Length: 351
Picture (spheres, rainbow, N blue to C red):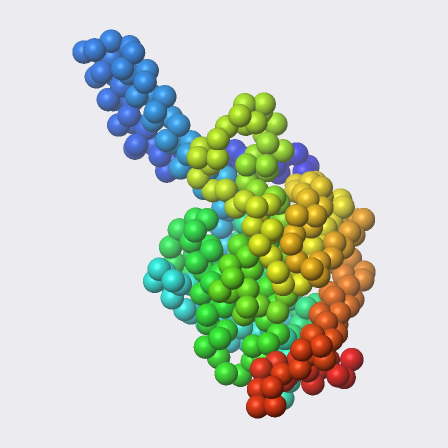
């Protein structure tokens, strides 16, 4: 059954690609015919190869980004109130002006300002509403606010997904949180699963945003898209293909060496999509002085968060981050008139 579903998804993706490029392909074939008629086969062959590689290059988006799975994902986004979660529906402009949608799920008013806030970047299929069951667990176990980010081209957000576009949407989400005065800016947690992990790593590796983030959590993410292509397609030719041939790269393996904030890598060891070894590689190359690799033996790609002990492990990691802040405060006390991180100090003293 699983094999049938996978074949159906691949067939659907290929059909979508063909429908989107049929007009372009027709023009190319017509030009090839004309060149062949007047100048011979060599020019037509060169143009055909050039056109084919261009079509494949642009078709990569259709294999990586799946906002239409399931089929109603672009018209119906489940809302947090369906799970009894208090929330605000937020629309902001990304860095390039693209309008994106978000859900801000908040703790009760008396706790909202003191609670940590998780920025949640989801995977490559569906929409943010499909992650609400996971958010229920985060909300009640970690007592946090949650900003669910909907990438461009997903759900009800405008635009078309692209690697740089998703990076811009991630930066815009942090800028939005810093525009609010009703949350604790000292405890912003960036979380990413699968493709969202690559988005989260890019965000946290940028120095100007790393200083705005308390800690990073990534789950079942990959080292890069070229590495994933080799795993999924198993074509020997891909070992010699230069990076320029990939439209989307998401090279997290090179970006983790710039991470300095506390980072937790959660790896489901039963993940059959992203090889768990990739999470180990990311952890090993991560330059943060406070990093942890959590391996969950029966964790699958999309369901690791359902395992017993998952939320407890997250809570322990956050507690350790607070303890480190407390120790840093004791080692490097702030000036008497400084108030930066006072909320963290108070919270850590209560651990």
